[in-house]
Length: 278
Ligand code: AMP
Image (cartoon, rainbow, N blue to C red; front, side):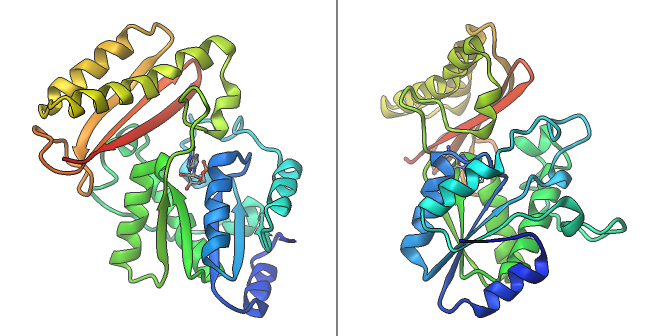
């Protein structure tokens, strides 16, 4: 497995690698969620490349960039044993010149949910993802539905800017007790870790209400809100039942819906989601 640090070296590898390329962009501190993307990329493509880059432009000054978990040595062992061909792990200076002044913004889809709480987040995500696409020239790129809004935003960018890449979205990988895997879970205390189960429980509640015939979106939100309110360690950011493609809030669940939520457990902010399909 080749580990590259510079755009020039990664491009040189890409130019020499024959066949289709599957790209898996990550911020490292890998878990089974990331590895499920790697395995899908390996299945579908002649070559698989993974990027490890904690992208500063998607963190606001008050966010957790400095405390974002990192363990590159362990990540490389996992990727090597999964048969990845190349890793691109650049420094921030390699990716952004001091006078970098070009950004990619997807409008509207990014002004709600995660974007309402983190106004500059998606501009950072779309800018780095387009840069990685330009550098790697992948045939396919793999993203988790864990970050459902991110996936929708990237699909929109690729469509609107005619980027020649197939975006593949894959299911959320969970711990046995239901907590969605996340690099940030390591920052939870044992009490917060237990409390964080309220996220997946409230999504299961939404699913069971829907399965029992509930179509009133506000009733679903209200039931989820009461469950969250009963967990003292959870500080709710948002609960949403939205049209799965426009991300507009729904009154009635009469079309595919994304049910998503975000909450803080101490300093750690977690997100989770599910879909409802009438
Ligand atoms: P990150 O390293 O958090 O930027 O995540 C890199 C990619 O892995 C993104 O496409 C995420 O959506 C995906 N991912 C993260 N956690 C999970 C999970 N639990 N299940 C599936 N995909 C995930």
